[in-house]
Length: 208
Image (cartoon, rainbow, N blue to C red; front, side, top):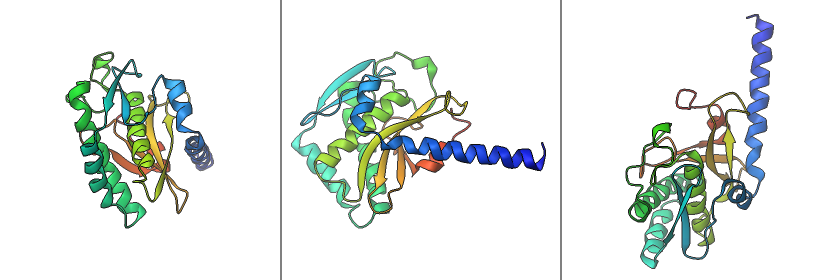
């Protein structure tokens, strides 16, 4: 490939990543409508599983749960970076908390088409929807001091030729930079990958 061709490809890829990164500007509720999820309501969350939100299991969040999450998020008050670390801890805790009623304790991380349709197993639509629900609950309790919950975004297939994948997103209130909070690559209860959305769009070519 000539130098001109390589430069041309680099420009196209950069433009594609920049364009994809703008997806997060949508409202989270539009994601739920488009993907069959149910947003949190009061102290209830509706956990998607069995791939594509085929099953939605309601889980009631207790006062003890809220107290635990408040303690987790308190560690992130100092800065946006600290809050992102606390968010990762909180999402990990949420996944362990709902594993009993949902039956998701054995959820396999990453691409696992063998478990499509199996209750308790989650694809990236389930994961990004659930993570967004957990984040919205934290936001409603005013436990997010440095970030705002945005709509999940998707990459792959029609967008850039890779296997389709989606992630939850938060936006740094100071810089306006969007960050991916991606639970899908990890097994249940393992901290999600947290990275800039721009980096997320360019990463994991071998996982999906």
